[in-house]
Every structure is written in structure tokens, then in C-alpha cells.
Image (spheres, rainbow, N blue to C red):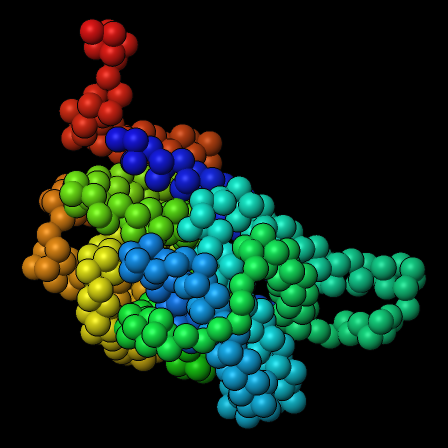
Length: 503
């Protein structure tokens, strides 16, 4: 129980930074939909999908590999840190330079003619992200959760500051005559450019701080460590690529797959902006998963030697499903007022109906992360390649087949379908090679019922806004009551009453 509480506590710290920081970042969707065009938002959606995909290439599974080799291989953790960081620096210089030189070609291929600078800035953003990956991982391994959280929040606040300055502040100062047009090279016709520059400035400014706190490392490339690390990380690279293929490629490919004039009055890039903005509304589920992942990955590895670890992993999974299904319902039933609050211009609400599907997709991603522990702690990461390859194929096929037919929902279905299949495959092989006593039947029941309640609550309309609010949110209480009935014995075991505690 103490281990479970430790994980919950660390998840809370990481969650606070992730939820607080990204919630602040999430609020930028208000600014983007208010001040930028749908076309600029479409560019933002597709370019950041590319960044998410390339982030996996630049780090190629080395964060998880670092945890494994620093905790379970009888190696000096500092030597592992120095070797891993040196390897990332070397590969980042090569990959970053290559992408920088390819920027003009990428601009032409992706229909950004004359904007090669966007992809040069993208190369720098990816390089800065990669240089921060292992120092941040080391902070997690050393349980420096508070500094980790503070650095993440500081990074996001810097990003927000530059966004507000460039997108809102400078145009306002120009409009009232405080500064002239073209001040410091400012261009009023730029949109996505200022989002990229803000990211670039924010990441560059925190590198010295994070490197200092993570500690000194000596540049060394020891073959005896690198060779087994490569063997371990390569399948994780493909796992990561397949994961972001599902999560991000629907947003990246959407504008290129959607037929012309599919949505009246919107270009394909503008429709991609609408799709991407509604994707943002599912961010709360992703925040929980990211917070959980930050805490759970080092925790799982540290507990792998415990004979009771399978039982502990099963309890963690069950608690994760309970919490996330409640969250999914809470967001879905309140979309009629959450949507207009964040999506400021007309037209964005047309895709609100895909949000519960996206929330379930993110939830399945979290379940997959829980399930995947078996091949990580048994060094069977080769299975991740095949599982995620299947997922990636499903993602791409569904995007090309269903986006031209169903538009927004076709893109959302790629998310939920891929992660569902990956969960099934990972569970099947996990039960063969590293059985964990998951409460599978209950878990599936909670997923099905919560998903049904989410859509029922979304479409429920009693005609009176106040009545709608209270009736829809009563569905959350009803679901919590359902959980209590099924989990009554477990709840009593975790929280015995005072009388029992004294006896």
C-alpha cells in the first residue's frame, strides 16, 4: 500500500505541473481561435503534428532506455547518464542539421512554398527538445519531482509570454501608435510563425537551468553500453513512431486527405484547423496520462524486482481506469459550454461531437502504457515493434478510407481504433509472457458504460440550459454511485473506518 501511495503522490506532483502548465498552454486556444485565422490554425495543427512525430525520431526511445539501464543493469547510473546524453547530443547535431538543410524541400512538398524558414525553426525546436530529454529523465529518476515540475511550468509560462507578446501585444501597441509597423522586424501577416518562435525561445532559455540541476556529465560514447542500449531502444523507437502516427498523423494528414469543398465554406487547411482545435479539447485526458507516465515509468522499473509487483501493477491499472472514465464523462457532458468558451470563432463547434471519441482514444493510450510494462521489464521490447506497427497501419488505413467519407469523425476513429487494437494485442502477449492479474472484466465494463454515458450526456437536451447543466452533471454522480456499488469492498479495504482502525 505504501508503494501505491508513493506512486499516487508522485503522480500528483507531476500531474500538478502537467495539468497546471498545460492548462495554461491550453488556454492559448482561446487566443489562437480569437486572433488567428482558421488557415493559420490549420498550419499550426499540421506543423506541430510533424514536430510530435519527429520528436520520437530525435530521442528514439532513449528516455525509457535510460531508466532501464540506470536501474536494472548493475551499471553506474552516472556513467549511463553521461553515455546517453553524449549519444543524444551527437545524434541531435546530425538529425537537426539534416532537417535544417532539407527545409526548402519540405516547404515545397507540404505546400508551404516560400516558407522554408518554418522548417528551419522546426529543426531547432526539435534539437532543443532532444537536448532536454535525458536531463529531465534523470530528474524523474532521482525523484526531483518538484524541480521537474517547476522547470516544466517555467518553460510553459515563457512560451505563453512570448505568444501573448507576439500575437496580442505587438499588434495592439502598433494599433495605438506606441510602436511603428515593422518594429524589430515584426510582421503583422505572420501567425503560425509566432507560435513556433515562442516555442523556440522558451525551450532555448531553460536548457542551461535543466542541465545545471541534472548535474555534470562527461562526454563519452562507450560501445559496451551503447550497443545493448541500441538493441533495447530500437523497438521503442518504432513503438513511439506508431504511437504518434495514430495520435498526430490524423491531424497532419487531415488537410491532405479531405476532399475539396467537403465542408462548405472551408478549405481543407481551414477544416484541419477546426479538427485540430477540437482535438485540443481532449487535452485533459492527455494531461492525466502524461502526468501518470512521468511518475509511473521510473516507479514500475523500481518495483520490477518486487515479488508482488504484478498485483501492484494490476491495482494501478484499475485505479487508472476508474479515474479516467470519470474524467471522460465529466468533460463530455459539459461540452456544450466548454466548447464555446475555448473555441472563440464561429464554425469550430461543428466538430464537438468527436471529442468523446478522442477522450476514449487517449484513455486507451493510457491503458496501453500500463499494459506495455511487461515487455519493458522483461527486455522483450521487440514485441512493441510488431504491436505498434499494426497500430500504425490501422491508423493510416482508417485516415485514408474514412476521412474522405466521414470527415472529422473519420480522423477521430483512427485514434480510438489504433489504440484499441494495440491494447488487445499487448494484453494477449502479456498474459503469455508476464501474467498480471488485471480486473479485465470490470475494466471493460467501466469503459463501455462510461463511453455510452459520455455520448448520451453530450446529446441530451432538455431545452433549458440550467436544467441541462444539472441533469447532465448528475450523470457523473450516477456513474460514481455505480463504481461504489462494484468497488465497495475494495474501497473499504483501502479506507477502513475509524472503529476498525482502532481495533
